[in-house]
Length: 254
Image (cartoon, rainbow, N blue to C red; front, side, top):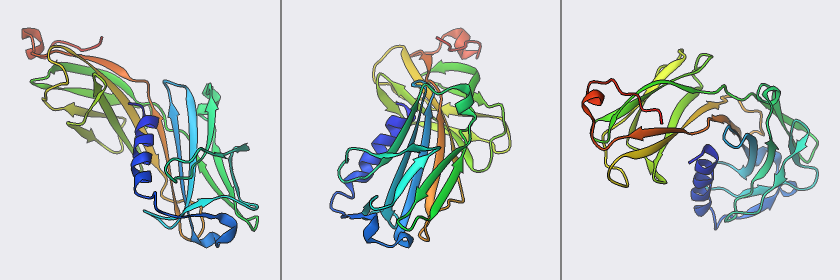
């Protein structure tokens, strides 16, 4: 499962809770009532950058805001357009395809103009990639550990997590080990049964997330998070450890 698919799943879950909530046009309410929710995800697998914006009255289960009048939102001059409604959820989106190395290092500015022409600007950069550098595989009986590194230090407002899948099903029995202020970390997959018996191909999607503590938004506030979703890594996990695997001498690259 990619970060974008996970995000869509969470969005759908949220949407199920707000189907009875009203929608209101931005020109009919005070800007100070609007909560802004921004997110950006770079998918290495698809080589696309997706930027989303949502506006609502307050937080949690809330009235959705549709931009109208002079209200608009754009990122680096690219207009963010309203997407087909999903159970009443209003999302504005811009997608950049075939992202270049220069675009990965670019500074992005999300500009929201309210009905009075006031500008609210939020700036973000894409986090750097997280690599798997050294891992020892064991088995479904013993579990396994995946080590990761990044070229720059993980900051307090960043985190790294993995999405594991086997035979198309999510595996959630994992323990994250993260050390702030360093470039390395690890995650341990606990012993567990897999969807099918025998050897398994497990895919690991590594996601680095940065959350911005300060968001320029109307008086109610807002949120902004940015993710780098690395291309999935395939892991071969055996049903039972061999003698060499039990001694910790087997690497699991497929």
